Length: 133
Image (cartoon, rainbow, N blue to C red):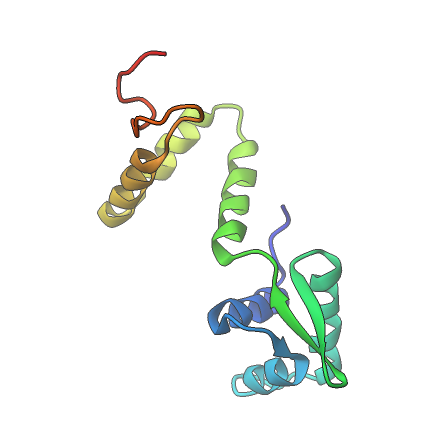
């Protein structure tokens, strides 16, 4: 997974935050509150995101509307998987990552790991809780 470019990320951030489809005009007007950007520039980047599969496109009158196909969490998880795939020592990379996490993030990671259920099991046991199959 390739990291989003600066303007791609800016567009996706707005759409993720708004949680609804938006026109290019709405995106341009919001971005222009921070910095000037041409309508055609945002239109081009929205179309690129559509062709890459990040956005779905629909018509609203004469204007295209865009909305995310994947969530921000899916994007973040993809970046993490890609980064992890760059190492030959996954356990060491994971350890280094966890060493630099805040206590809150460690707690969230622990809760996420505990919530996973092995496929084919219906007893609610989390992976690695000592039950052998």
